[in-house]
Length: 260
Image (cartoon, rainbow, N blue to C red; front, side):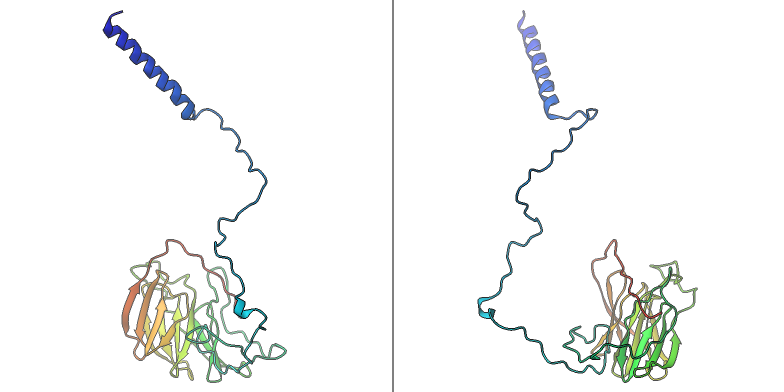
């Protein structure tokens, strides 16, 4: 055998060996896969469990639970009660009986949802129905005092949401410095007179607002569905600075039931 033929034979044998070895490491896509084996019984360790275990501090052992005495809560001006959304032990009705019950407008349905928590200030309860109608009721009796429809014209559209306001929903209310403020899924922020319901100003937004506004230091703060923080001058409604946070590609909305 010539040296050249001898080298060709060695090369052919090497190629065949590599192919044969590859057949053991690369799975045949046409071959049925074996069923996965079950894990053997034993101690299971949670992958989500924290490495640090919570335990009672030695200095707190033997101490009783302390609850501050109940305190009256005359007003509830924001959806969370206060700017800090921190309310102490409220002196509520001792037997929790329903004092009164009133309907206040459009209830939740396939294309409308009551999402605005009620607020209370100055002896009035303020609520918003599923169609952006704001109303005031006497806090003692529930008697209706006034109603104001904030729903804009169905022709209203925006660059970000050209579909209009047909299925808009959500929003909320806030009370500050003697004025009532409303945010709506119909892409608007408004200031109302809490005594008459008259609209002092309305500012439109590019995206719907599903949460209640916050009012502090002369500004109205709202967050739209695009995770953009918007601010407005509380006295005039003039748009102020904005901040764009990370936009969520998908979101889940929780339906909050309200008075029908």
